[in-house]
Length: 251
Image (tube, rainbow, N blue to C red):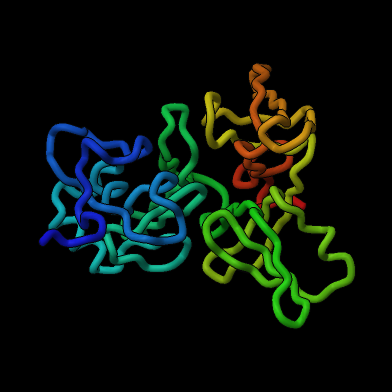
């Protein structure tokens, strides 16, 4: 009698497209555990550290690094090599004094970009939904699975809207800045044909349904691209928040 349920193993040849792996060199890879990001929008921390950043050569070395509590994701220690990391996550490795932010890449993968300047303890989170919990308090549901409660203030429901971005402090989750989803803001394209491109939002064309609507973005070199609103992630005013003036995020 065969056992029911899915396999506990992940073959490299069948791994998601956004995992940067040599597909035929070895048979198996780390299988992403359930976590803050879905499997198709994340990569296991073990693959990121060993196969992409080359900080370990073997699984044994990797587990040694993790078990020593050398690695933090969004300010919290991670020891599980199968822990999924995703868009905008901040990976911090204190022993080598390096931090990385996962951003979309034109090859349809999540690429770690070293944080060489600007704050290392801040993260951009997109608001996917808003809910009202018991007591009438508003809760923001963010793209990385976080839920943040807002204070009871007059007009706060209209301040934070779906698709807006907030910058939070890690790991406290204190809101440091808020970037509305509107023209004039700087944004990344996180999926679709133009994934990885970034620039200023210049125009919205709203039609019936988000998939029928379009957003125009102009990059710093003057190239204009068009995409759907669901593929756009605002990260700052004129530049990404991590490149703005000292003091971190904008207003």
